[in-house]
Amino acid sequence: MIQLLSGQRIEVPNHGAATVRFGGRDSPRVALAVISPDGNLSALSENAAGEWRLSSFEQPGERYDIVAYITDDRHGGFVNSAYPTEVTIEGTQYDFPAPAQQLAAVILGEVYLKDGKRRLKVSNEGFTFGIDAYLRAKQMQSVVVPHRNRPAPRLGDDPAPRTQDRPRRRSGSPLASGSGVIIGPNLVVTNAHVIEDGGSFQMGRIRSELTPIAVDETHDLALLEGQVSGSPLPVRLGSPLWLGEAIMASGYPLMDVLGADLKVTTGNVSGLTGKSGDISRFQFTAPIASGSSGGAIIDEFGNLVGITSASLAHENMRERGSISENVNFGIRSSLVFEMAAAAGVALPAIAPLNNGNRREAVDRLRASVVSILVVA
Figure 1: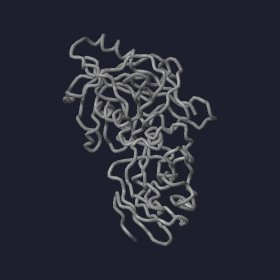
Figure 2: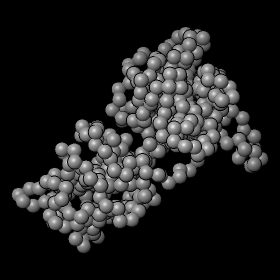
Figure 3: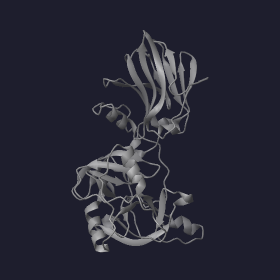
Figure 4: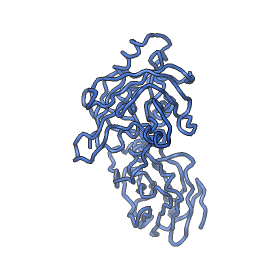
């Protein structure tokens, strides 16, 4: 097998075929397509799970990309976990390099015609936020992507205060509810697990449609876009959390039981890391419940310091003979900022608040924290 390097060029036969095989655990979640600069897109034929065939290098045109992408990227995940990638061209096997970054759409190679000969330039670059981000960058938003949103392997559950129970229901039926935070014009951030099983999403206040534009499964974040009425919260970036700091958690837990109005609880930062020393999260004591996921965690002045994500699985702890109360986890607000930047979305420059009282902070939450309805 020949090991290829990023940027390396190899000559390929005009009428030759190629087979692409993914050997990693997430290979069933990946599809391949060829995409030309004029917006022509066609899928490779699927021989088996993780194996795809290009019948001829000549057929798609004079210049095109061979793109591998996660088909169900609303659920998160990256093409990286489908590697290693082996490409066989007319009996010669090549090992393609894995991306250095976490990408949900990867350009395996750029095929072009030069001096009557067809060449393939090896690439391992792409887009963190998937095939839709690729199409936006190429100004091809109207292109229909094959194999989009085909069923994904079931993801493992985290011990999180997930959205309310989700029995299987017919399309269009309400499944669950969660919480979200307005962070910019027409932008709402929530947890990835809030939207993972839904077919469509609505902002509970006015039932306006929300569309996921970026999902980060690793950090349990999702960015949604829609006609949003409300005020974005200032994101606290320059000042780190400190142990024991007072915070408030807000959201829409158990709406079918507690009602559809905003709930706010108080507590403090009880730990500066999440499970197993995860520095992207912190622990807090403000009580939360199912449906709180995706809600805002603010400091005493009303700056966003985190997004509610998880609660320790109390039943599991009791089975071990331990007692746990109000051990909850938030995602640091700096990751919200980084996610928006990676998605190419500029957040408004809102100066951090450094004074005020609790009543004023809660008033800001009323205008900034929304309920999210998840529909089958």
